[in-house]
Image (cartoon, rainbow, N blue to C red; front, side):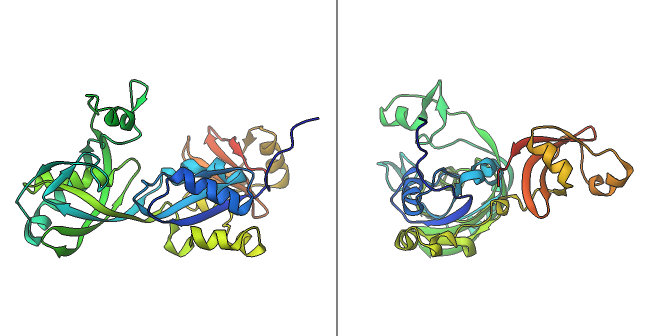
Length: 308
């Protein structure tokens, strides 16, 4: 007799407004228990001290996680001037100090240099691997290592307000792989001082905003009720930025079976005029998700079939 699969087959996204303290993995575990969900994963890690949006994928939505992780993100963070910490946030030990405190004019003057494609060295305490080992493990062991700079995209960086002489708050729109702790550290250096993040909140990730969010405490209070299921967003919510392609029943059937669908016929040209070879499309039939597919040389080839 085969082993019984634990949990309910729930498909969709639930966006948790993560509190400070738990890790992203711990939040996933609490969501799994709250919903009794069979399969759960998250769409982009948040540091334990960070708050804000942590999209959680359930069931078939786990197949769409890369599209959320690759999406644009918005953060708000507060910087503490005059101190550097080993972790580039409030958890680490102080490793440097400075008496310099930048004013609003000085801050505004350096911000344009951080917008666009910029080189950024990740924090030493990060999950990046060095020779097969996590950087944070090596940093905790006080081993010497070097992290290579990476090119990341910062679309917007704005000074929100000066809190006091020691603190300033910023908002940023960025692409995949940008570290706010590194950004705070580098801002301090550019301003002739040192700095670290004291507070970090994610305001948006991919198609998800604060309007979609529910607190972890509220979700756990709902338990396995119908109200909890009502907080689950459709799988396709994560695919808003991907071109949709409506298929016939027969085309959808072939795609579900892993077969390519030829769409070279004259009648299909209107459906395909904005696609280029290699583009990913979200295939539907009768308004229901069918698969994530790739358009290649006149064919639609399935990449991930959605069993909904």
